[in-house]
Amino acid sequence: MFKKPRLNFWQIWNMNVGFFGIQFSFGLQQTAVNPIFSFLGADHADLPLLNLAGPVTGLIIQPIIGAISDKTWIPGWGRRKPFFMIGAILASLCLFAFPYSSELWFAVGLLWILDVGNNTAMEPYRAFVGDKLADDQLTYGFQMQSLFVGAGITLANFSIFMFQDWFSDPSVSSSICDPTGETVSSIPTWVYYSFFLGAIASIITTVWTVVTTPAIPPSEKQLAELKEFNSKPFGTRISEPFKEIVGAIGDMPKLLKDLSLVYLFQWYALFIYWQFITPMLRRSMFGISNEDITKLEGIKETCMAGGDIIPADLGFAERIQNMSEQALAQTGLMNGTYNFVTMIVALALVPIAAKVGNKLVYVTSLFLTGIAMFMLPFIQDQWLLLFPMILFGIGWATMMGVPYSMVSKVIPQERRGVYMGIVNMMIVIPMFIQTLSFGPIVKHLLNDNPINAILFAGTSFLIAGFLALRLKVSNQYL
Image (cartoon, rainbow, N blue to C red):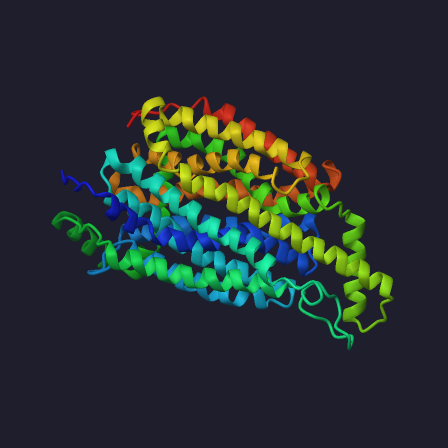
């Protein structure tokens, strides 16, 4: 049996650098995309459905790309690198275009393409880490990946906060109409800069990993199997990944089955947070009601139709628009904080997990994140709001590393790509359920109140924590 060489710190570092760019893109999705939808006229109850792109593309793209990459070998590139390079290029092009969206439908369409790019890159990258590392380095490797997850999303979010402070001009960016009565862009100009920075980061960091990190070549037996597969008719090769996915699900280890139930509540809750944190802040921190938003949109529509707007209404609209931009900037500060904490504690969790076990660390993280959700709606101070983000950051660091370490130890090497794709299906299916179900829930059961949505997310995290207590983890001290 082939024994993988042990890698040093800088080799594992270089291998994970590309994750920084991918996660910068995800950071913008988490923080900026939903406010952009709101700037373009979307109601907060519509946000779950408008985010359907994420779970659908993740459900379709990641397991298929994972299965295909298992059967791929390109000299000089390996199995996985072609896929996350293609994904990074596609994501970068979308990031450049996104802030120029003039209509809601255009922004939603770009989100679909952006998610295709990110998901094409994501799963092969996780499989790449598993390909390169021996079992006793997996926790270290995936926690290093968590470090870059935190770093990428941190910079994405802090850039939003800083650019709003540096470049926001209330007399321009928050205007509803210019002096001639023409409509100005609904998306603040300062938001553009974060997207441009993300597009550049996605390409540069992915190229870094491609250039610095060689893939482990397959054995002669594996090469023969790949040649045999590639000699099959095209239709067979296309259908084989689907058969592989179905077969792998049938053979799925019990740990993955139990983890899927934990993930149902964990990722349902995370998607609620990312969609509703800015609407919650508009309500809890700035006192903006649903009626205020409705009035703002009415004034915008009157302006777009060329109607006259009295000075009082124009002043009201500019004030609400400006506070909405401040809520987005505050979201950037908060999300940047929890991801900065993730970056700091990611590697520190490795010795802790080795001492007390992956399971205990994971369960604790879910409870801490649930507590953070319950605290958020009751804090109005900009800086005190960062305390629950510390708890959230510890939880996010664990969620992005420890479960993958547990899973990697129970899945076969030759099916690593497809199983990492199935793990992603366990993420996107709860997101898919959330996008279809939570709009009616928040509108009809939660009093159309984004504060109640965040409290609902906290309850879901606590349920996930109790379910995680049931996980049977083998070799949990490795």
